[in-house]
Image (cartoon, rainbow over the protein chains, first blue to last red):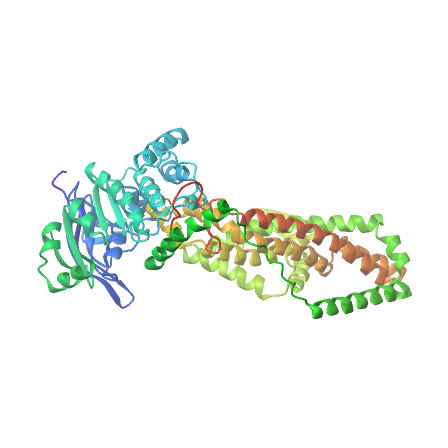
Length: 255
Length: 322
């Protein structure tokens, strides 16, 4: 079990109409690993992330999470599309944090965190409340449980969103540019929560522009451009001495 | 944009000490006493309009064709108030059915299932594509088309055959006709409401493993209410007036039907039209007040993120983006 990768992508491709966004992405993420994906906008990194929890369907290649094929069932040499219920079951195991937080604005912070465990996992309200309070305290918002998202700062909203994803007890966390919509002074508090999460051994895939975070926290780094993995390896090495021209050009602009 | 923000905040921190210190100096700035801008045209036009209105009222009160004594006589007539009650009942029952059915149709139209989607589309096509008057006449004739309700296998002798008494009850027929037509319009209102909810909401719920049904009922529908409520109020007011078309079925116990029946006997159609209008106006006025409060309540937006209205952050929190 431990030698099985948490995520294995093998030639993952995806097109929107005639626009080929992913052109055969292959990579593996081991349990407990933190992978950062960097690259210019439009490089397909967010799309790849959304394929992992089947928000987008893969057109070609194989993508599996924890040994399970994402969105399909393989029987013999044929692939069968999963029922919505089965796909939903797969997604429960994967937490996702969005660039625009996507908190439910008609619910308090606490209710946001409680919603999915109660509706999807079917746990009792008392249990869900206790767990949600614990998670909010963990992201440093123990006193904000009764606040509506509109009354929280961007950084606080994103921390609630992280707590909401963690409430489903996922084995993998996906972060889609979690700090890109934040004011500069609020980025740190979200990255701190993510660092803390990485320390607990959570498997994380982070699409980010925060090179400092990648250098400090990531176990590996992938540079994507034009739908392909251009370069990958140890983040400190890739960031300090990139081998490819495109990586060099990109890093010279963002560092 | 970030550069702008920074400049702005820098400017405000620089200027804030001077503004806070000025009251303590004791030298209050002199209040502006300017001569108000005059609007001579506004005054003139209002005076002319008021004069015209007064002339019309004086003239109308003296014209015998209006039959003011008859208006006074029939406005509180028992038959009329009974008719008003029927009109209210038609409005309330039809709207309740239309809202439920409209919600169902809207969700069906947004469903990923193509069959369900097409059924909803077909319904809207038929009921929005034909006039309500024609539909009501048609519903009045349904009892002729389906004389019995049969239960059994197709093309075989039915096991049970019930005379279609339901289709002979014009009150029920009226509610069926009005609500089925209205449901098509409510479906469009609800659909617009559902589509007004940010796509990210559905995505976040899906990513949490919630089913489509849960996502709709727990996340999307509650947030769409703010957009759905105001036009629904409009539809209620519109429905109150549309009930006068039930004469097509024919149902004649509603407010307009009763007033017409009375005038057919007394040969005084004008005062009875005025009587009916007074009652319709009374009801719509009450509904308009109700709608005002409903809208106020739903636009208050506790915890709602509104693009047109920035909610002030509470306490010492730093204002967030988005």
